[in-house]
Structures are given as C-alpha cells and as structure tokens.
Image (cartoon, rainbow, N blue to C red; front, side, top):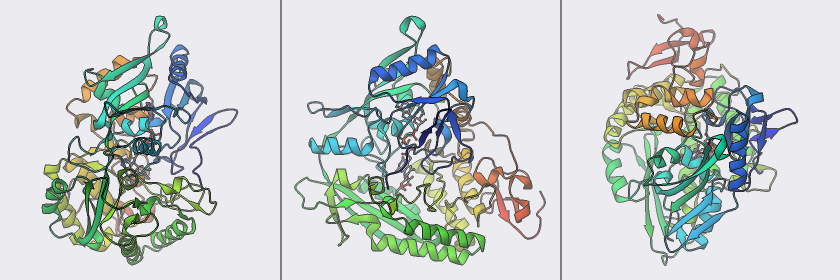
Length: 528
Ligand SMILES: Cc1cc2nc3c(=O)[nH]c(=O)nc-3n(C[C@H](O)[C@H](O)[C@H](O)COP(=O)(O)OP(=O)(O)OC[C@H]3O[C@@H](n4cnc5c(N)ncnc54)[C@H](O)[C@@H]3O)c2cc1C
Ligand SMILES: O=C1O[C@H]([C@@H](O)CO)C(O)=C1O
C-alpha cells in the first residue's frame, strides 16, 4: 500500500503528520493551509507571500520522515502555512563533465539514485532508507555508513545549493541565494534544519558507477570495542549492528568492486520490505502482550527470533533480486545502499511496517553520534549495564506504547543508555531521529553553533521559518516537566510524578551511569 500523504488539508486547516502518524509529544501540528510549488520561481513566490503577510512558514515533504517536530509551525494556525515540496521534484540535471548532479529539493533519494545510475554514475553515500527528499535529508544531516573519503553524511558530498530566504520589500520579500563552499553561509545552509529558508536546488558530487560486495558476519560481540575501528578502515561501507541482549554483533564486510564484477543483487532491507501487513501486526500484537504481562522472557524470544530471521534472510540481501543464495552478495551501488520496497507496492494487503493505517509497529528512534575515540568506552559501559541483567535488554530499544503515559517494560535501561550517550559521552543528536531530551544542551555541543545562529538571524530576521518547536530543539531548552513526561522522552525525571507511580514506575538513579535519572519499576517506593 502506498503510504498516505503526511499533509492532510480540509477547508479550515492543514494537519502535518510524521510517517508514524503521531509526533513524539502525541500532539498534532496544524497550519492555515499549504502551497505546492513545482518550480523555483513558485517556491520563491511562496516565501515572498509569507514574508509580505508576516506569516510563519515551514517546508514540508511528501515523506515527513523526521521524528522531531522540526517541520511543525507555531500552533497559531491563522498565522502559519506549509510549503510542500511534494511536487517540486521535476528537475534532475547531470553534469557529466564535472561529475555533479543538481536536483530540485523535492526529488526523492530513489529518484536521484536511479537517474544517476542510468547515466553511468553512482551516489557514494546515502541513508539506508530511500523514502526521503534530498532537501529533507541534507537538512537533518542524514547519512549512510563510511569513514572513507568525505565520510558517510550526504551533506558532505554537496558542492552547491540554492536557498530561498526572506528579503526586503524592495527585493520582493524573498530572494534566491546561490551558495557553494566559497560562501561562509554554505555549511549553515546545508544542514539548515528547515530554519534558514527553503532550499530549492542541491548539487551533489557523483562518481563513475560501481558495484558493491556485501557479506554479513553474525558473530559474538566479544571484542567489539577493539574491532570497530579496523572494521571501518578496512571496508568502505562498513557497519555493525549490535544485539547486546543476544551477545551478537553483525559485521558488514562491504566494499566497492569494479563494474565488470558479476552480480546483479538487490538489498531489500528486511525492515523496509513490502511485507504482508499480517507480519508487523502479529509482531506488534506479541510485543504489546509481552508489555502488558511484563514478560521479559517473551521479549527475549522475540529478540532471538528477529535475529535468527535476519540471519536467515541476510538482512534482505537478494543475490538474484529475488532470494538470498550465499555470500558475497554483489550488485550495483544503486540497488545495494538504499531501499524501501514497502513504499511502492500497489497491493492492498502489504504496507510499510509502521504505516499508521494498520495495527503495525510503533516505535521511536534514539540516535547519538559519538566521537570515534570515545566509542570504545561507551561500548564497555553498555556491556557493564548489559551484564547486570542481559534479559532486560531484550526489545528495550524502541517500543512505543499506543496510548500516552504508558510505561514500558525495562524502559529504565533504555533511558540510562540514552542519557549515558548524550550526557556522559557528549554525543551529538541526529536531528532527524531522536526524542526531545536528546537535544538538551545541544547548543553547547558544536564549536560553530553561534555561527549557525548568526546565519539564522542574518537570513531570517523575522523568524518566518522558526517555531516554538524548532526553537526548543535548536536551543536545547529544558522543557516544562509534566506528569509522565519521562515516559515519552520529553524530560528527564526528577520526581516520581514524571514517571508513572500509579504503575509502580519511580524516578531512580542509573545502575552504571549514576548521573542518569530513569523510570524504574519497583514494588516498593524508593526515596524521591
Ligand atoms: C524508517 C526510517 C529510516 C531512516 N533511515 C535513516 C538512515 O539510514 N540514515 C539517516 O541518517 N536517517 C535516517 N532516517 C531519518 C531521515 O533520513 C531524516 O529524518 C530525513 O531528514 C527525512 O527526510 P524528509 O525528506 O522526510 O524530510 P522531513 O522530515 O519532511 O523534513 C526534515 C526537515 O527538513 C526541512 N526541509 C525539508 N525540505 C526542505 C527544503 N527543501 N528546504 C528547507 N527545509 C527543508 C523540514 O522543514 C524539516 O525541518 C530514517 C527515518 C525513518 C523514518
Ligand atoms: O530505521 C532505520 O533504519 C536505518 C538503519 O538502522 C538500517 O540498518 C536507520 O538509520 C534508521 O533510522
């Protein structure tokens, strides 16, 4: 089933959803109406209209795949509107002489990859998920996995960018800036979090088309903390998936190979496959049952089964495009990095596992970005917490309850890991995949942060593209603490009421990271 548009308008207002159907705070976000530019001039006219009428605007995309409410305008509906790039995806210009490609910001990652591959080029890095737009993915610093060359973040392969920003009346209230690495505003405009203006064009470097050879090694996680650096140095697209509760690490041995190497495989990542709705619905049903019955045993069975299935199906690698038949799996770059077959199925009984129209998966993501030098100590701390009670790690990562204020089994473990990463190890938060507490103090984590704020004040002095939501995330402000706020990652508990005393969840100290404050289940009330 093709996912529904995340932007639903009726005659009175427009509502923006994210891909999961509900934002982290479970509150909807609205605006007066939406405009759908198809050309750069129409995009400029949209920004000009907002500035002239002193409105708030947010650029939204056809996917809305970020989790933080960056794209949500202020809730004063009558003074905000959405600029959707859903139909701003017509231009893809490949400059073969200079090996660069320039695209409209609303072009999807899959559209771009297919266009450059057919022209004999490859995009070197990209996220694993293809259901995102080029404008949206660079705006949050989205990435693939590589320590080679310019690294795994897509915006580091961007060599030019045009952005529509507010302007004076004499300039027609909006103007287009053409930026490249010579311009001091370039870095801010690339990862602009949607708060500097409306990106219209993005120019990325591409390379002559190549193939990939991928082999997964499902093995023990012993020594992981001493192996990750060499792994990343040895394999251009290396990654590691770690299941602490199963004491298993999955090393991906992944390198480019020449175009004439035989193989026409497809990476149809298991988590994004176009599966019958029945599968995510039954997974969700068992997760919810184990949550309700507080069955750690059940959660661990699910974790073991998931791992076994990933091993059996090689994570979705298909040697002939249909089935997995053995390693190495070799295929074109355009088919081996990004996937998302659940986006394109016309069938009614299949969908993406998180499609809000089914009773499927509902989860949050926590994405800390640690300096490579600290990662070893972080892994050792995680192992220390795991060794205290390995079963408490089963499925503790990202289950999200359907109803608000519902505590989760062993959520204290996940909260301790989250706080350990962001506050003990100072990890930077991924702008597209975190809960609000991940952004606490974020303005002190980037040496050039004040330069970004200066760029914002220079380009958008009226804060047309800002909202209380994006300011909250941008300035890492401590949010007001309400009952149960810690259950949704909207605060760090400091009183029992921030957890769920009525369900025996009390604000307690971390077990390994003593400065963590987490909501732990206890049949006796700990001192507050
Ligand atoms: C299932 C899933 C898998 C994912 N996998 C990965 C992954 O492998 N790697 C990774 O790094 N991330 C991943 N993500 C996160 C995702 O890549 C980012 O959140 C990305 O920013 C979403 O892109 P989008 O086009 O949906 O933009 P949106 O989420 O709609 O917008 C993001 C921000 O960009 C702004 N924006 C969008 N377009 C423009 C424009 N033209 N001009 C100015 N501002 C604009 C919006 O206002 C908003 O502030 C995943 C997310 C999901 C849900
Ligand atoms: O949901 C996601 O899938 C990818 C990656 O985990 C796939 O291995 C990613 O970065 C997400 O946020």
